Length: 509
Image (cartoon, rainbow, N blue to C red):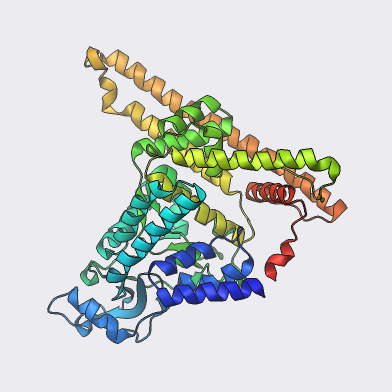
């Protein structure tokens, strides 16, 4: 009861304040592995069912974006009630006046949001200052970038451009399977302005409703394979990354490209918050993943150092590349355990110190890293909310390998290979040799990366067999994948520090 009451009060606070408080509530709802389930259950309504305003209040917003034209000049059968509502906008269905057969989703900015966002961001900055001062956790380095990105969400013409760019990335860079199983709705520019975005209406079931997805017979494994693959592709191959992939921005429908069997297609919505990675960051991030997978600590240290981080091992744990080296026993401590408890406490303090040190060394951190890490954490939470049906790290690693291979080969075949500093233009023979060496290096990087992923996958498969046997013998539920192993390691560390076993059933109280 206590968690449900607290969650309801927090939901009421977010609804009453609106604006960025809705986004704050969405961020809490997505943390399914960190908070009691009632928080996710109560706050998930904020994904697409936040408070909306009357249609009479949004008509002026629509009409001021199209001088000389009225709502009826643009749309037919404009829905009197919003079909979805989130932090900065609400969505209505309609038909285009220019093509009445075309059903569209009309996303309209809430009239008060432009005034409110300034105060909300002021409160956000003040809270960040307070947290940094009170807990000595350096987070102010990320505030300017977050504020800039959140203000960009108010420009719906920019969002329309993000949407079309994401679609072109799929068409030109993705493999055939990913192009078939992911869809991005079409933008209608003639009915789009800075405060109004009109896109094709797509019927589907939101990931906010996992039980409905199960009732409709969709496979959680297929859904998560598509989702993780899409965002891994954006991070490591396309370099144009969706910054807010929460369940309300993802729909599932029957794949119209497949008339032979039932196959889900993932529909990606809300392209307001995007980060465009520099080529240098994308290559370094893929190389960091490769180095972590093959155990090249020196390469990890070099990349982390170039970002101003001296503790590559801690940074690897912070971005979920490896589980923390923690452990403990499921029993209360005795007198003989005092030394062990002291060591556990010291370990916790060491982790805190290293984390703070890593955050403090932030002046050289790439600005893309904040939102790329956010994307990966939300996808991880989505995977957990569906029962962790896929090995997320394996899929991310596969696309990291593919992206790194493409970049290395592109560099090898680039016309820049003809130039070599003081030597100027290289002879054709030297240019050819340089390109061959570059291509071979790219292919070798890819092969060794995929081999490391295969070994890691084989290790998890062996672990899975052992876990099934252990579960059958002891009755203890098995942990299915690396995400679960990481969560279990953290839970054991907490138990060790607290001195008693954590009863997860209490979280439902």
